[in-house]
Every structure is written in structure tokens, then in C-alpha cells.
Image 1 (cartoon, one colour):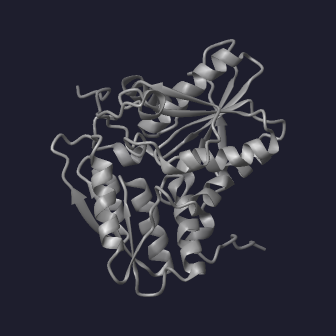
Image 2 (tube, rainbow, N blue to C red):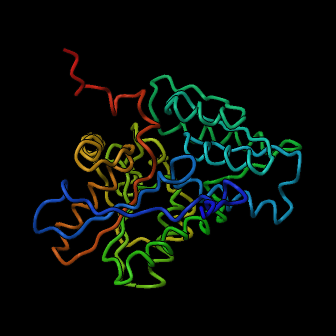
Length: 321
């Protein structure tokens, strides 16, 4: 007798419970073990699905999001994709304020879920210090209109419950504990939620915040121009000011992160974006510093499929003969 496959009642039930893989080729000898939690196994290909589910669920529970209303958010792509996905499943309209500075693949994904995509022009095509604030201002303006709810990812603590599940899963996946966890930050929710769970189980877990070296807002107080989507928002994230759960902050060069992305794909089979390259570079450095007995964990934030049109995976290794 053939047993039918297990089924869920909703696509939202497929969020989370992502696998972890140990890196075997890009980590040097005598360094600690480095593990990557593959968050691109979530439905839209990023860990932002966790956040979007809890923000929408809590807004519905409180009654601030009612049938017929439109959710609005400022997003560079992954949060927008996740909110568009969750809103589609829950039957809400969604309006994203984004920019041409972000990957077309992400913007098309948002539109595919039925959302309205409004773009703020970046003359350079890059993420400048004033771009994200401009997007936020427009989203907030829309959110003040009747029938709109501004989900406000930059200040909304509801996101933390979603990200806390990453830490809870890691505790189960590493019963003997984690020496250090590191992660690049945009709004900071993932790092905060994960760290809260890890430190509750093992307070000595060392948590390291990461940002692009070309925009060292947190490490040096100098916002700058960069092209790492989803992180480096150009100002101190309000949630991090409220929940300063990290032990250390480091900046990582974007160019080296892009090289690491290519190595991860060609050597480890991990196809991910530049923020993941930043995460892995820092995790390897931590593993070297902490030594061979250390267990260092980070996350693959999203899928490389979101960046195939850009310069990250530009086909330079193709054999065209």
C-alpha cells in the first residue's frame, strides 16, 4: 500500500526548518568548523519569509490589518518578496516601495505575487546613504492613508519572533552548543532574534554583527555607497538600539564577499547572494581565531537565483568555444 505524502494546509507552513551544512573546501586547515544554515530553502528563497509571516499574523491578531486593506513596506527586494508572498496567501493587497538599485529578479518576484511595485530612482544604480530613508518616507506617507497599513520592518518588533525560530532550530541542530554566530545586518532582526534564542540556551555564545566595509555605519559611524542588497541601510537600525544583543561588530569588504560567493557555488555547491559571502568570510575568520575546537555558524541569507542578471554571477567562467 502506498502511503500518500504529508501535506500542509498552507504554503506558510513550509517556512522554516531549514538544513545546515558544514563547509569542507573553503575553510583552511586548523580552523574551527564552519556551518551554514541554508535559509534559501524557505518558499521565496530567503529568511525574510519568517519575519513576514509573524508581522502579518500579529497585525491580523491585533486587528490593525483588516480584510480589504493594503500592506505597504519599503524594501530592497527580499522583504518585499516575502511580504508579497504572505499577503497573497492571506488574501491581502501589498504595495512595495523599492528602487532600481535592487535586483530585477526580486522586483519581478514581488510583482508575480500580485503586488504593486513603486520605484524610487537611484541615479547611480547603487545603494546610497539617502536611498533607504527616501523609500521609508514614501512608504510611511502611503501608510498614513485610509486603507493602508505600513508594516514598518525597521521598527516592528513582531519580526523578532519569526527570526527567533532560526536560533531555536540551531539549538536543536547543535545540541552541544555553538561557539560563535555571525550575521550581516540590515534592520538587524535576524541577528537579534537568533541571538536571543542562542544566548538564552548558552549565554557565552559569541555573536558578531557584520556590515559592508564600504558603508561602516555601525563599526565606524560612516554610511557609504555599496551594492550588497538587504544590508547596510545607512543608519543605525532602531531595533539594534533597543536590543543590543551582539558582542562585537565587524566590517567585511564587498569585493572579497563576491569572490567568496563564487567559491561557495563552484566549490561547495552553495548558490547564494553577496550578504552570504560576507557571512561566510567572517565565519571563516572567526573559525581561524577561535581554533579547531570551535563551532562557528552563519546563514545563507537568500538564493543566488535572485542575482543572475547582475555582476555577481556574470558568466565569466563559461566556455564559449
